[in-house]
Length: 252
Image 1 (tube, one colour):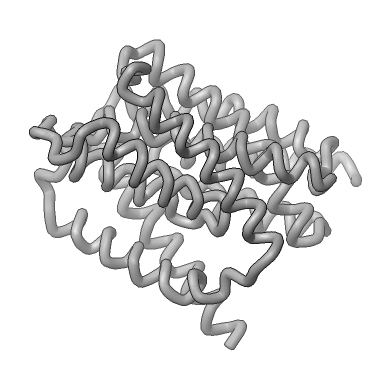
Image 2 (cartoon, rainbow, N blue to C red; image 1 turned 90 degrees about the horizontal axis):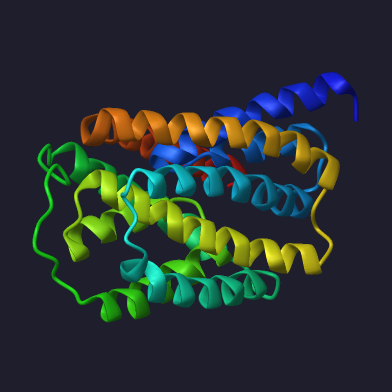
């Protein structure tokens, strides 16, 4: 791999880390970059999990230092998410995920429109509708499995669940989302490493960018709060929807 390509992948990692730390969706940048570099789809997904894990770790560290992560609140959710993300990643090696590819873009589009039409959503904390145990077991199980099995939009679904079911305001919902994203990334990465689907030299180049981008993105989100996150959130979700629909219809 030439040094020019490695430099471009470094900047792809930085950009993906920045976007991921704020609203998720960094895979929109990193996965196409890895495929462009010549990796097979399976190797690209495994390498992407390796590099995105480190960027998410930096974002989680930044949110935690700002006091936006309640560890007693997320402990059970993290455990359930890890177990089901492992199951999801293992399952995707056994069965097709074609049905999800067709359904998910429309689910994401619905969320984006709902957020766009609800300017007050997540501005302030509200009363939670679910207990932490119910949230951890049901949402952690479903979204943990989904992120391991397919993945696109998982961060969006997590953020919406944190706002609507736990009553968190948007900044704290984003912080919790980063914690569970880190959990499912690590679980999936474990499966990919065991199956030898990680290109380590490329992963290390992108990790360097991810660490910088993750820190920058989390700092921006903390500094500017919910209005800034909301704009990036809606932009990323629409971009993700357009990409998934383009992939779906171009393949058809």
